[in-house]
Amino acid sequence: MSKATPMTMLVRFAPSPTGLIHAGNARTAVANYLFAHANDAEFLLRIDDTDAERSKPEFEAAILEDLAWLGLRHDRFERQSERGDVHRAAVERLKASGRLYPCFETAEELDRKRKRQQARHLPPVYDRAALSLTDDERAKFEAEGRKPHWRFLLSQKKVVWDDLIRGPVEIDTGTVSDPVVVREDGTFLYTLPSVVDDADLGVTHIIRGEDHVTNSAAQIEIFEALGVTPPRMAHHPLLVGASGEALSKRLGSLSLRTMRENGIEPMALSAYLAKIGTSDPIEPRASLNDLAGEFDFSKIGRAPARFDEAELAALNAKHLHAVPYEEVRDRLAVLGCDLGPAFWLAVRPNLGRLSDAASFRVLVEGPVVPTREDPEMLEKAADLLPDTLDGESWGIWTKAITAATGRKGKALFHPLRLALTGREHGPELAKLLPLIGPARARARLMGETA
Ligand code: GLU
Image (cartoon, rainbow, N blue to C red; front, side, top):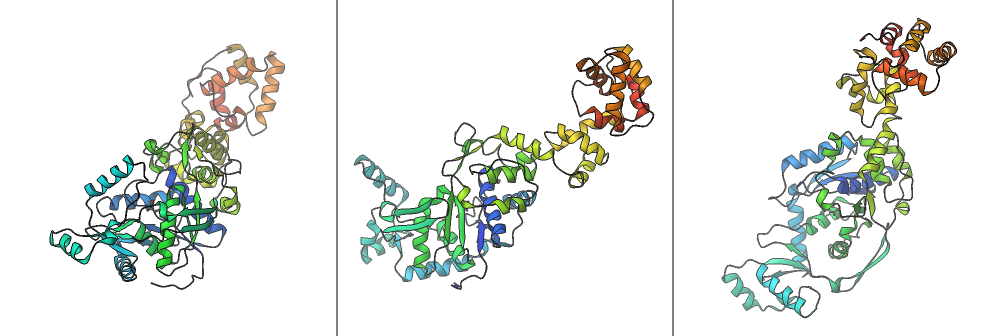
């Protein structure tokens, strides 16, 4: 294990490939990425795939695709399943120094112990019975065919760290069980490979959800037992739903996949995940760099952050309303509605999602079946329509119609909209009119499908 002080700061996002990335772990990924970019640090993507049974290559592929969609490029990549030698070497060192000890209790025996503790109103902390096994007793268990699992011997002292989000944290490791780190079959539980890799790869900052706070105390002790200075820790509050409910049951619908399919823009989602639960306003941002420039742990509150899908949808719309044409041109082409920058500027204020733009193509190119609400006025309007139309035309033309017919306000605009677009609502007519063009506009005003 290298103990060298790393030259660069290093953070990691460490998903297990046992499912899709959802709002909760995406928020952790965003925080790590933004911290890295705000501090010239490196961003490591570490696939925590030591659970061979539950880890699936298709989930790893999905994680990579989803992070790429969000734009969270990693500087380094590691897969824990390929680092078994490093993990095993660390286990041997911890065994040699007496910090790992073998236990032979079966799951049922442990369960019985917990029930007895419960009945006596004692905390369900492992009683360390295995520490007092004699060599004979151990040999007897092994002769019975029992294989040991291994626990890390906690110091039962106060572990203290200055959390970058929570401030000073103090956890008495006498109040928690010695964690099992190696199973009977020799496979590792999450904690051990995580600490060994953080130490070996030179992770300097661990940024993750506060569900890991208690783990951190044991992990800090393992870092120290390995002779490595623990990384700085930052535990952010977890996400809850709009009315404060736990999100866990709805995580399927909050997967990045589903959000993407529902038309959420990656930058809108990044901005939302970066800002909820902070003192900053929730506003669209043009780039991850902008978000990185504003990233600061001190802005993250201690209360759970509310993930409100309606608020995200509103932010998504607001984001789209400001997106420049060049940024969406290719996607508009795929949607079959790249009609140029003027079309984009005309329709973007009406979008909730990008794909809505496709529904406006017909307004420009036809065929539109006009609804005629005041034919007399519409005929006059057709007469007054100039032969060339630009951005100024609408104002001049409608003034002329008012002068000629006395129609104004709703009595003017509603029939014009119905005739020109066949719809009650839609993009601003001043911007649409030059795109529709004089010939089509005149035909529609006269009641022709065009
Ligand atoms: N694989 C762990 C998880 O997904 C990583 C936790 C950590 O950041 O240490 O919960």
